[in-house]
Image (cartoon, rainbow, N blue to C red):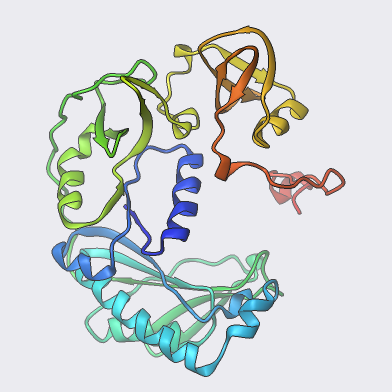
Length: 330
């Protein structure tokens, strides 16, 4: 379950999750106070708390301009409310992971110290010195700080606490059969479909009961991975379905584009064609990107407008995903 109260940030959250391609995420937009309805429920909770943003000072002039001692105090009060509600929703034996992008002790170690005083046990991890992470000890809390002059990326804080008790294995959950079927969902016996506001969402059937319980307590935005949207009386593939690992790619013709054409597609342009009909899947290097709709001499672009590439810098150095051992990472 991925929860974000702020609507603007929630759109970015959904986009990232759907582009990730996994189908095991429900997106909610609840206030943390709603977690009161789910006491001792979650095995792991990650709190990415709103903070004063000192870790962003290097790259963001606004982060520097808006900082003040008052903002630190306000953030600390908000964080205390969030972390206490998260602690109540954590199951015995579960782990609370707490993170901010600031270095104020009142927003970091002091928040975890308050949970320790309620019986929490510190959780530590082995840190390779080569990573450049700074370990801190304050009271009963072990924290991990990333400073931008020592680690790759910007700055943040991380700490972990375990709730006393032992985790209990959850019972087997029912696997409801889907009320709807669509041709492009692989393994429809394991993945069930749920309609929500005119969209069919795919979810793992093993977690139906769990998901329904969450839905009754929280404000659900996306109960699974969107796979189909209603167009008149028909279901058409949702943009997120093209990127999902649950997509049956054999259900559609596939257009594997070269690099220039793929970038053009991601910018929102049409794809030239002859006698193009129906729906096709666009891919690059064998990796699916999105959908196009046939219109004779062209394929109309169905890549969401909000996801489009707005600018391109052809002279910029290419990003390499290879690790340091390959000698090409930047």
